[in-house]
Length: 106
Image (cartoon, rainbow, N blue to C red):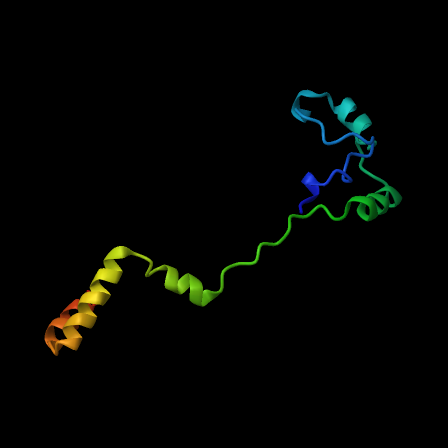
């Protein structure tokens, strides 16, 4: 659950986040957020940190390295070539298998 969708996280005035903030004057935004142009005092900042939590995005857990490596092979042509190489290897045509599996040095 993100804080944006949680109704308990509101602006200090008690309203949910206003729409079209960019159209409001600086004084209106400062009044609505109960802030000052110079910023919050340490006490206000600590109180808001306790009330609303840190102003940070949640960290997304990345894919493991082995899964990212295997994703490079997620292509139909790769599967066709691997199947052809396996079939020629089963039939004992080793030269054809090596030609299919050969990687060009481009």
